[in-house]
Image (cartoon, rainbow, N blue to C red; front, side):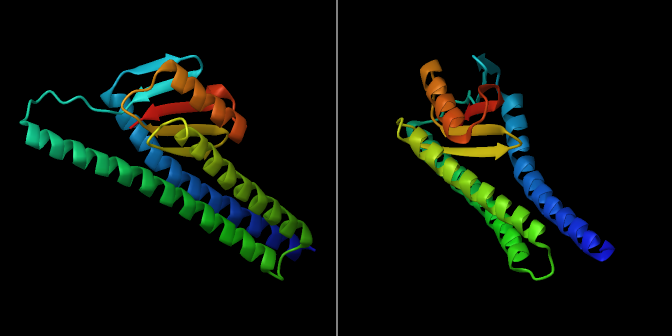
Length: 192
């Protein structure tokens, strides 16, 4: 019996560590970016949503040809950011799902442990679906791109937009609240 409890504790510890590592990797990157955005710009608060503008203002005047190249490079970097962030998020969730699936397939864990692993698989799958739906609904509001990062019942929504007005922020907040069941005070919306 003690051996089975020890296996159970080790398995739970490994699962928690994997989730923690994935979260830290995911959260560390977004924390660095949010910190950089806070250092570059002023933060405005609209309602319960913190709004951060991540567009740096250039004071140098350059010829039109170079301006177009800079704008093209900026758009390319923004597209890469959104694609790379989504890919990192999906990779993290895929690794977590794979770990839980191995637990379910294992003959060395109890049925209770398998039930917990199945619950986590369902939770992650539902979260992935909710994220996809929320991002698509936000894009349907005429935003070029969006990525949503969720951790501990908080959401960071990064929108590709040159400007966000209060109505747009309210629309984004409403979608995230409804689809991800996250309270409005736990939603941070920024633009890139």
